[in-house]
Image (cartoon, rainbow, N blue to C red):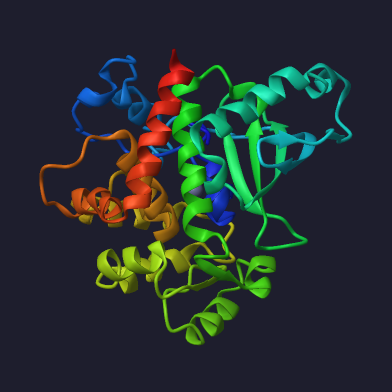
Length: 330
Ligand SMILES: [Zn+2]
C-alpha cells in the first residue's frame, strides 16, 4: 500500500492482509520484460519497481499522522457484475468521488481484467475507499458474516499509478489465492482476535499443518508447501521477533529486529516486506513470479519464485494476468 508511509506499516502488519505497496527494500535485480510480453510494451520490470520501497527506513519521518481513511461505497459482486452501491456516510468533499460510479467501475475493471472469473469466486464484495493519494492502494479481507467470502478494497485516489496498482492488486490477489477457504480453514476466534498471542499458540497447537494466524492450512495447500520448504528452518528465529509487536506501543524494536532478520537472510526473500510474515512472503513471491522472468539461478529467493511453476494452473494464471496487464497498460 503506501509507498511513502512507513508508519502505515505498523497498521498493515498488524492487520496482516491489508498490506501491499510499501514493499521491498530494493535490490531486485531481475532483467527487463520477458520476450513474450515485449510486443505489448509491458514492462514487468517497471511493475516490480513500482512495488519497491524502503519499508524499515524511518529516517526523516517525524510526527507521522495516519491519513484519514473513508469507505465511500460497497458493492456486492456477482461474477464480473457489481450491484447498486451502498453509500457510506462521508465528508462533503468526498461526495464527488463517492458518486463517480464510472471511476469505481474502472477500478473493479482492472481487477477483473487481471484475474479470470473462475479464479476469483471467493470475492463477494467490492469496497471503494480513500485515504488520499498513495498510502493504502488496495486491500483484501474476509467478510465478517462469512469467512469464506472475501472483500476486495481499492483506493479510488490511486488509479492513475497503474504499475503500482497492478503490482498491489496481484499481491492482494495472492492472499485470496493462498488464504481462501479451499486452502486454509478459517478460524473465527483468531480472525476476531488476531493479536491474541496466547490464542494463536493454542490454535497452532491443534493444527498439524502450518497455522497462518487466522486458520489451519490444508495438507495440499500452496502455503503449506511453501512454508514446509522455505520456512521450517527460520521460523523459530522469526517468531521470536514477531512477538515483539504484540501489545506494544513502541514498535521500533520490532522493526529494527525484523530488518536485521532481513539483512541476515537477504538471499531468501524477494524484498524486505516479505519478512513480515510467511503469508506476506508467499504473496510477494507470487507477485514476483508473475512479473519476473523465470529465475535462472538457485538462490532461495529464486527457488521461491520458481516454486509456483510447479503448479500448471498458476502458470496458466500468470499468462492470463500478464495479458491482462498488457491490455491495461496499452
Ligand atoms: Zn499483503
